[in-house]
Length: 456
Image 1: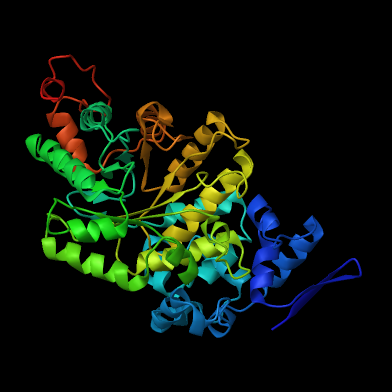
Image 2 (image 1 turned 30 degrees about the vertical axis):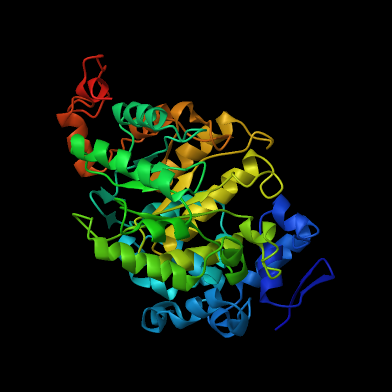
């Protein structure tokens, strides 16, 4: 179906729905690189006017990537909740925006319609929103998950302790873990990006982390962010809490990662059989990022933000504990500067939360992007206001293995303090019992005699 809109006697034409979605997107370098971006601000505005008047039902009748050729499209269409969709079935995209922003729509209402929303609907409505709209709606969403603790409750902000090491040295990793714990990080997960996917090395890392967890009775979960095939091989050999995988929004993107939906299902079922969770069974951890489909030449002419939202449909199917966009990690070819990274981070968080995901964010940038730590401070604060479930805690904010800039243990303390956020309830209690936080949630000075340090 084609669309058009006239501004000042000029007719702007769009051949199909995916063209409208692409042209309506706020400018970013990735869409320009792919030849999908609007050629002018006027064309972008025309596309946004057209998009606002498209009925939500059209997204169920026109697949932007062919159903027969893409298993992610099939997943989206086959799992759509038609009953929950009844409440909003008469809406246009513009109506959906206004409804989401209305005072009558609360956390409970948003949870009820989460599975009625396809990623294309969610991406579409985000393109009609200012940054404050994205924040206002996301703040109303509450997505709570559990494994050994409870993540995502309003008033709480969790932190992934990211103790990466350039040579996978276990003592270096352990030192970073203790450092992070002493700053109150680690309630989302203690999660290592390994240098190598060696089964033996990953297995040793898992055993070391699990030993620390058990020795100090830490109410959290561990993960080595290895490839899914490595996790599958280790399921019966090592203490796996969470199964990790990077995912994308098209079948071809996931194939470029060496995975498909059936492999994810196999890993999910295998991890469930281990029964390692004590409070709940949310045990998948997914990372995403705008630009991955374009970089793999697997985007089907779909803009990068809509492709990103489609990845959230994959994540949603497996009831994850954690999902985060690594928003600035892919580089300036896709998100050029701090302004584009900030917008993308707010979009990703909004889209994931609206679809019912426990959405966190790696507030980050690469060293060749036109961004700096002030941009990350701004985005971190905005995401904290928006109710982000978790962020990253990296020693000094500089990941010495992946060579990019993220957020530090100190940044996590800052955002919790200024926004009155707490760690996961069970983890907060542990921090107090260990003498790391006082009763007001302030970090205490840690003496060298502290038993975490003595037992390193």
